[in-house]
Amino acid sequence: MSNRRTLLQGLGAALLGAGVAGRARANPAGWTRLALPEFLLETNALAKGLVADTTPAGQDRYLLALAAQAVRLVDVPVPPLRDSGQGAGAGTFIGFNPGGDPFTILHWKLEPGARIRTHAHTYGNVVTLVLEGSARIENYQCVGERDFTAPGEFKVRKTRDQWVSSGAVNLVSLERDYIHGISAGPAGARGLDLTTRIRPKAPTPYLQLAEGGGGGAGAIQLASWTYDPPKPP
Image 1 (tube, helix red, strand yellow):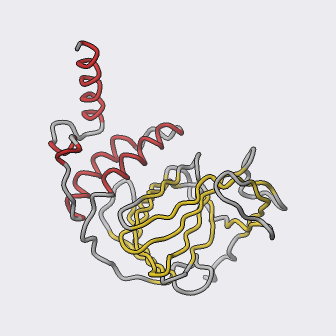
Image 2 (cartoon, one colour):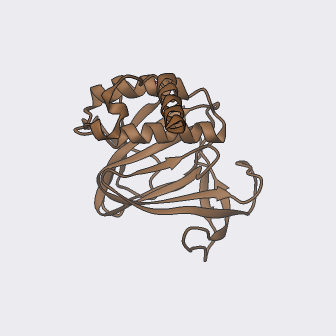
């Protein structure tokens, strides 16, 4: 009994540090769905209490905490959408739901079969939540030392090959699964990226897999980086 009491006291202290102590929703059995205003009220306070720890374990804790909140979202309004600029062809759109702090809420939509090019996250971690439809999300990491400016080919390992349907999430840390690409299913997909910048902003490197590459999670493939040309002033 004393061990259990110690564990519960430790959990209570952890929740207090995250700014959510004393709320009924700290108990999963009491959770309810959240509209965006309620989500922001709860999650901004939670995120501010966790974001300072940018170690691999700290980022994991932060992303898991945001994901636990994000899966409760319902009735997220669709903002004005524009071409994402990251599509492998047409049919990828992105917008912005204001109010997140310290994260931003990017609202995306993919037409059936549309694909977001595989790219690395060098300055921000991400919780991707699918709201409608389904998508295949593939995550990669560099084998050995990573260098986002390296010329020529290097090796990457596919760390996840995930079919994400409505209500499910995919997580991108700056230390784990930090390269990802998204392909919409036959009915298209719509969702959110909760993106938190914790390093200086930098151009986005796109992963170009060598011909003949493939395989499921765990497969090692040759790849190289490409960058979009700078936009004209």
